[in-house]
Each structure stands twice: as C-alpha cells, then as structure tokens.
Length: 242
Image (cartoon, rainbow, N blue to C red; front, side, top):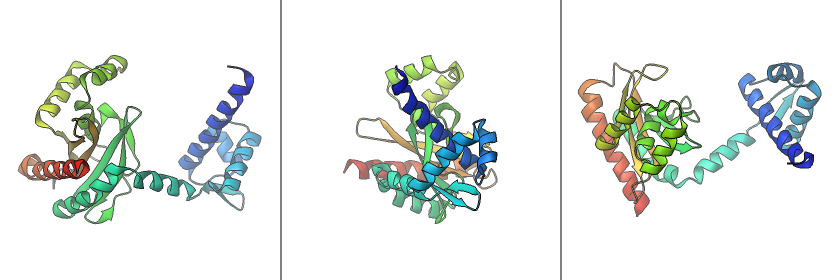
C-alpha cells in the first residue's frame, strides 16, 4: 500500500478516535481531548473543526461535544432493521406483562449489540447501545448456540475465550432453546435469553428479559418468565416469516 492509500485510512481512523474520545469525556476542550488521546492539539483541532462543520460535533465557548446527528444516524439504522420493527410491539407487551427489562440484541462483528431495551413502557437507555463479546453475554450465547456448526467451529478455533465448559453450555442452550444466567451481569441481575431465528433456523438475534434476583428467580424465572419469552420469540419469528 503506497502513501496516498495509507493517508486517508489513517485520517479516517484518527477521526473516529476523536469521536470516541469525545464520547468518553462527554464535553472537552482541544487540550483535554488531545491529552486524553495522546494526539497533538493541532491534529485534534482539525478533526473537531471538520466534524463541527459537518454537524457531528457542537462547539460552545471553547469546549466540544457530540451532536445529535449521531442519534439520527443510529436511530435511522435501527428503524431500517426488520427484526427491530417486527419485534418492538411484542417486546412492549412483554415488558408490560412482566414488569421487567426486555431487550433485543443482534450480532455484529462477533459481538452482541443491544439495539432496543424497554421496561414497563419506558425505554431503558442503560442497556441500549451496549455491546459485548458473544460468549460473555447471555444474549450472545443464545445467538452463538444457534450458529451453523461450521461457523461456530470457526469462532471456537479463533477465540481464546472458548473452552470445553462453554461448548457444553452452548449445546445445552441449543437443546433447550434458551439461556439462563443468574447474577452474572454487572448489576447482579438474573436474565433469560431466547434466540430469534429465520426460516432456515439461523439466529437473527436474541430476546432477553432481565430483572433483580429478588423479583426474577425460582419458578418465576425458570417457568413463568421463560415461557413468556419463548412465546414472544416464536410470535416474532412467525411475523417475520409471514
């Protein structure tokens, strides 16, 4: 690759580094952001000024923050997702019925990404937009368990975090068509996840319900809530296929 080809690639990568750094700091001046990213102030300023002129960064006084143009992009992307559009009403009903947090997750680049989350009629922004390695998340495991054998084996052979105990867990998830995790989330919640599959049995995403260990445990977790999540996932699959 010659210098002309490398330059735009480095420039694009640095622009996204600036964007992600500004997201981490929320609000920052050029000096603070440059120090945070270990980049020169002149380079950071040029990227910020370009992003400002494009409408992706807002400047007030001498500090910058991300603009709502990113929200427009993300929301537009989600609205174009057929799984989200189909699942949303079923998820809203499930949240009202259970009183727990209901989420929809999809796979992207070997990670699980939560694209919608709701609790009793109120959007749960704490979960929305988060991502994690497939094997480190209950929704990711539900998706991973339903990957075709060859694809799953490729992930197994290329990922250090795969081991025999995880492979056994994935087989159990596939046999029961659901994944249950107890107290393994950052806030110690219990969760159940069910894959949403297409007509060829390929996982399109996963539907999850999570709640505190006090409200979601025992029979309510293992039978009542699990049955509701499985039923909702099946309804979404039927709607997608129609």
